[in-house]
Length: 475
Image (cartoon, rainbow, N blue to C red):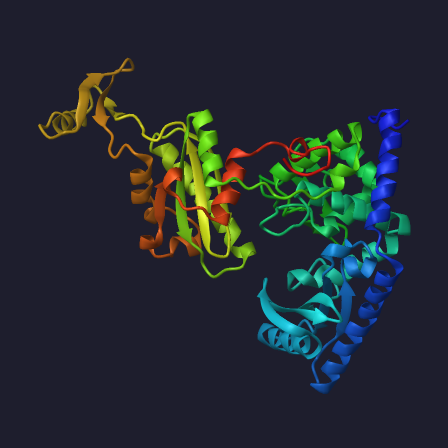
């Protein structure tokens, strides 16, 4: 029996994982289709490059499609087109998009550090990404330049058995909602997950290690950590092809903490429901109001216009806006209980839960210590006939002067509406037209997908597996 897992649970886990692994394994026919595309795509790109005399150095299919670690219903093929390091970025953009359009159909331009193309090829969705053919992955010119080295590192080490273990790990984290390194998810990237399965040998080996982790987790040997790590980092694992880079930068502390708890809970009570992706919880406005009546609290909703940005650029700004609003309300003497935010194609919303819809009318105004020159001006100001004084001036126990003054406005909606245009909300949100901001109480807000998502994040924080019924569906 292995440490930390009861014998019965160990046997159940083995049966569960064998069943799920068989279900996740692609059919031989599907694997053959993927293999044909892996060969045909680069060849088509090379022919297109020759026809336009493009300075293409190398083209390859990388990522999960190349290694077989994909989940069949989430397979996107990553095609990398690498050019000379000295090629100007504008020419890189031009050549990458031209070659992508030459081989893909139904294309659309997407944006990361530089533009790339998304399109179709023989029934598969393909991301055609240009980059530079660097010789040293520790000195990339663009973030994708390390990709060929990642591909080679994993392809040399992963066994056929570990490929199946990676699929199990991906599906487990997907069911938790923490698989994916994009800004919306802040979870585990596929590359990070494959490195962790290699490190701990298997899916269950990873969970056995993870159940005893404490955030932040440092898997790099002492003295070998990447430099300049942010304080809020959740997990440290140096990229084996570039030791100066932390592979887990995108992972949030919240999602790592959730994974640690889930690892222990699964090992104690393994079942196939852990691999079932639930429908994301969404609270309606009326459901949210019913919960607020139980909590005897108040929610204010800030509606912000959606800038024309991709999610990976927008969502960090939305989270900054959420923090700025919380900080301003706290400075304004409101009692903040929690916050949440969401962004859809139509709008951005920030929700703040407060203990009270109004703050007390009384605010202490501190004055100077008795006996210094500024006492006179303080007394003159706060004894004037029109001074908004409720009580005072008086001397505090520490010998300094103070008054109790009236605080206006008292309602949180009026207060926040007046402050919102002046707050630092993120570059693109702050530059939006202030007249487009709208601040209302939850009962005055309109139903929308963004509101339902943010309400769930604010008022439905139960651990995901505790929501599941016997069938694995979310409750």
